[in-house]
Length: 91
Image (tube, rainbow, N blue to C red; front, side, top):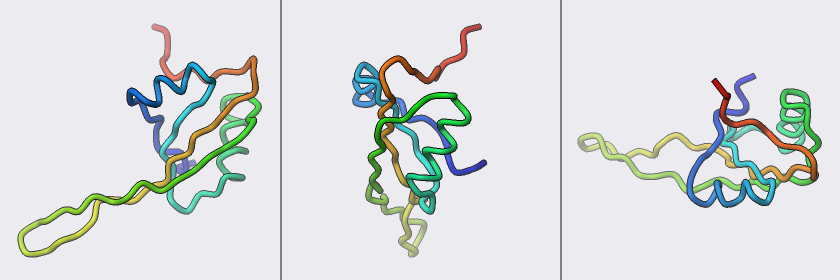
């Protein structure tokens, strides 16, 4: 499934991990219900709540043409206590 693109790891999202909140960039057409079903089945966790927003697109200029970067939706997923998502594999 190409709805979930990748997890977001920034200073803010790393702080949110302490509160059991995980941030993912997803396809802009995806709904909260679709993402909830996919995350719960793929990672075998229970989701408490989902927040979503669409960050503003950045302008790009290539010669005389002004366009925008690819748009995406960002989901902040709060898990129920006792559950976690392994973002890094232990090798």
